[in-house]
Length: 184
Image (cartoon, rainbow, N blue to C red):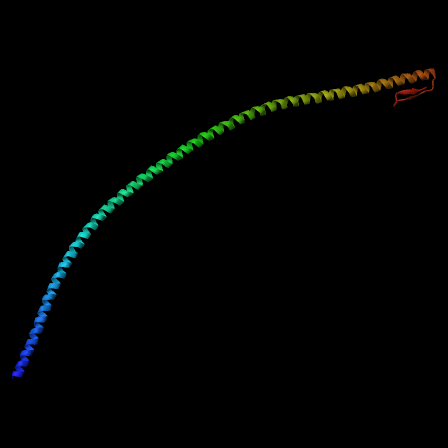
């Protein structure tokens, strides 16, 4: 029995050793769990601290973003106002330049209209002179025609009288009317 008892005692000793090892492992696990729990608590505190900082940064970032937006809007507003002022200044300068050009064109138009009036007046005078000259020409043509007819009639009358005188005096003679002389 001793053997059995020894074995039982050895079995008890191995069991006890295993129990002690297990207890020691449990204690070590518990220490590790406590240590890990502490680390978890530290990490949880650090996480909370980071969250707090993130919230603060978000708040600061939001404020900075709002500030940046306001600054951007102010800058853009100033830029737009400057561009509007510049555009208005350019517009005003262009308007004045165009007004001066328009005045120059209007002055030139007035000069040309005056020249047109003078030319029309001269043209009317020339047309009147031309009309008067044409009428005078017609009068002279008429007078010339009258004179030619009168001259022709006078020549016929003289020729008639001359022939009659020749006939009375009985001189044979031919009168060349075209050449205006006689063959006697």
